[in-house]
Length: 470
Image (cartoon, rainbow, N blue to C red):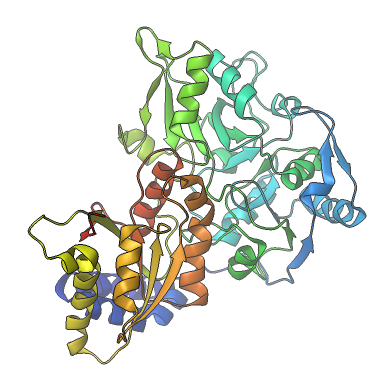
């Protein structure tokens, strides 16, 4: 009965969006919001409600004796105590949310199916969506990969440059020498590969090192929601579902790791998921290592879902982020594509024509309803589109506008750091009805930001909005 009602509501919402104006869609989306979210909220099957303890930790008080193999040293007793409390949970097959440099992770021992099953239940995560395994050292990695398998030269170059850091690599779990992997099948979803990374955040790395086991950890949020970049985001989604959150402050990168597959027979690399390490950084590293070619072809074969598709890979994904909807707030997200107006347009139209048209469109639809909309605007700092909206919204408007600064145009790493926090702030705290986001140039981490926004919006194309020539 519940699933039938959910299906009915989904169909009705879809039909409404297709047949009605923008305002009708937003209005009815808002009406359905509470009922729909309560019906589709993942049941906590097998998980009793529990008190969630939040422990503040100071990452700056943790140091390591070696970049790759070192053990943690603690200068802050409170942080050391918090880490040890989390270690006890990991070792007793329970869950801990913790900060990484990318986003907050929800961790459990990757060796325990009992522990890993709790991750899926707490998040409401589909059971065929594999997890990334986190290690604190290469020695720990060697405990679960086949002893007869060695890193290819490309992996060696990338790990020397980017580990610890926001780089995830696909590695084999079995071989003729190691027919049975110690990694839980729930982590790999029964595949013969697993995605691994060594996080750079001192709290996450210390937790793994002190636990003595590889830790499986997806983002610490409800499945499908924007990833958490603060402990408060985790608490909002998972409070009463998990026993502990280590609060290490906001994440510095702000988007998930980049996932690279170098296990292909042709020896070429494929990027399975864009993330906190840009394609350009990877290309530069391989070029400097003299590894930019494989059999006369560029070593980098492409980016999944951008340069190529693979139906078999989509049916059985080897890494997160390939199959299911992700990063979506409750509010509708629309990406705006700024374009220059024609020379024939009036001077005033050139200044703020596109923003005026957009606001007028909402205003015209407003004749059908007295509802005042709350509209979120995620704009590049001092961009022409940003200035156009400012000019249009300084006069009294029927609707309320809330701005979120994505940072300077030439610093996409700032936009990446702010992306999920901005979506959550507008959606959860300000409860906007719709979020307009300015398109970023897809260079560096701008490509990662746009990939996340397209998934959040479900858009295949972006509406164009005229901006000033100046």
